[in-house]
Image (cartoon, rainbow, N blue to C red; front, side, top):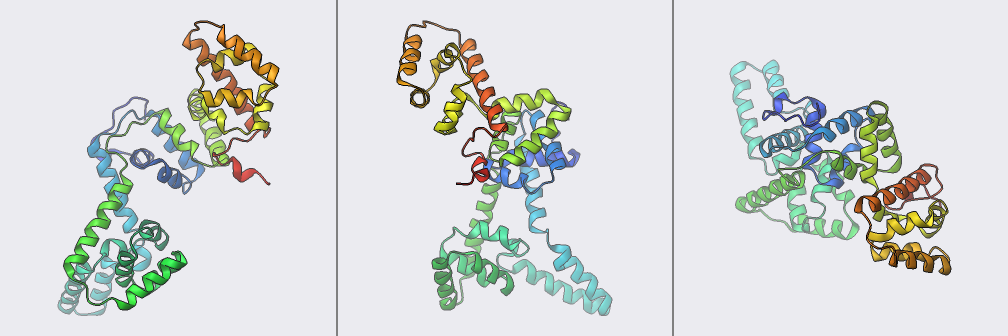
Length: 344
C-alpha cells in the first residue's frame, strides 16, 4: 500500500497485512502491543509498513474489520472442537437423511438458545482475561453455563478470594430468570465490542507505529525496526524520532543522565533546556556539579529569544545520543522493556 493511498470501503478488498493494520488502529495501545507479540517478525514488519502509510480509517471499514476479527476469534476452535457443520456431516453419515435432518435441527436450535453461546468457543485464557474483573455473581452465572473443563480452567485462573466467592455463588445458585441471563449476555457482548473498538475513526501513520512499538519489549522493537530499516531507512528514522522524545529523558536514571551529560556541551544543553519542563531541568541540574548547574542556569537566563527550530534541533541531537547509549547498553530507559534486561 502506498503512503496516503485511500482505503477501500469493502473489507474484502483488503489484503491480510492491511486488515491487521486496520485492526491495530481500532485497538487500544496495550491490546495492540499484546497482539503484535503473537505475530511472527516477518508478519509484524509487513503490518507496520502498511500501518505507517494509513492516514485514516473510515468508521464503516473499521467496524467491519473488527466484526470479522471478533467472529474469527470466537470460532477459532471450530475445526478442533467440532461445530455445527461437523455435527451435520456426522449425523448424515450415520443416520437416514430424514432422521439426521430432524436431529440436526433440534441440535441447532439448542445451540442457538444456549446461554453465553458467543463465549463457548473462546479460548479459556482469552475468556479469563475478559471476565476476571466482572462481579463474582456474573462470573458464577457464566461458568455455570460453560463446559465443565472450561469452567475449571476459568476458576483456576481467578484470584483465590474470588475463586471461593464464585464457587459459593455457583453452589447456591438456583434457576435463573432467562431475562436476567439475556441482560447479562447483552452487556458482556457490548463490553467485548467496546474493548476491541477504542475508536471508530483512528489516524494511522508513523506516530501510531511509534506509540505501539513503545509498548513492546526492547528486543521486539529492535527486531522490527531492523527489518523496517533494511527496506525503508527513512521510515525507520522517522519512527525512531517519534518513539523517544526529549521529555522522555526523565525515564533515564541518574547514572544514565550523568553518562549522557558527558557527551553534551553546555551551549547545546542550554538551548535544549530552554523549553524543557521544570522537572526535566531539575533532573539535569541535580546530576551535575552545583557550579556547572549555576553556569547553565545563568546562560539560559541571559540567552534571550531563540528560534523554536533551533531548540528542537538541539533536543533531537541529545535524544540521538540517548538512543545510541541505550543501544550500546550504557544506559537503561525504564518503562520500555529495559527493566527486563536488568539484574539487580
